[in-house]
Image (cartoon, rainbow, N blue to C red):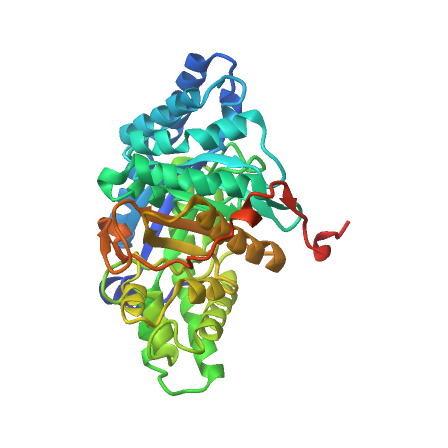
Length: 454
């Protein structure tokens, strides 16, 4: 039972500490929409999504008003479009027509984003996979709410370096295609290793083929809540520090569990998972970097940052799993540069570099996220950064991701403004030495020996 003290405590978290449910995401399978006729496929996709999600936004708003819990985003994820569209699409432009359909239905039902314009190519690419990947720049340039992701590696299969090379080129092409908006298209494109099937967060959400026909996944977020809790134990030892983070994560996750179950009941859609991730925003007091400073660092990026982040990530998971029977997605601490004011400040102060961020991704939930780089960065350099991050995920049996934004026309020392939850970012320098010969080898990097468990 929830007692009156817990109710008051939760209200305090919401009103003063930026506690919110970051997203309710409805996952929708498109497998029953597959058709060899492109027009029929698009019609089926539109109808399936509209009928499934037409009440999603209204339900989220009702729950938010009824329980007093802010629900920031309502989103949809769908079966990877490379799978759903493979039978009908003969050209990249055919796939773009599906992106337009997704964008149209997203507008109709009122969701913030729709994810799943995706391909899963960890071991190899089908013709449909490659066509979808090559269509991404046009698709993201011509749509507003569509998000795209490509899984290019896994612990079990290794890293598809042909796909890594292609994604370096596609990211640059997407930057060019959306250069009038400071290359914003790249903010809606993620490259994954070990992508989860049930991630509610954008831009990497898609509805995995092992999922039910429809499902409700919820992402909670409370960096401000954790920071405020840690302020009360400033100077205490690590045992007390860890206990405080665990107890706080438990309380935050309970709010997410409540919202998820209620949304599931009202929509008549099975509850999937709660994602425990601490997802920051540009708002003051809603920063993962500030939690790291509260743990004892002058700035994020100082010596000890990776250890502090590892501690934070682990305790969030330990506290969260006690509050929900079904925890999934990414679950841990996000470290996006543009979406976290503390990270922006650390980069601006010279405390945080791309290489230090890469080291931090060894112990956090995601990877190199929302990082703006010079627009003249070579495609092979981008592919090399992707390959490094995929290797971290592959070897450590964890999800890693890359969301780089080469901002056309801008260089180191300048900033780029994305607006809203995406915030703004300083352009970060990239290592200028070449990896061309490495990227151009082609083929696959084999899976590590510890992946062989059959």
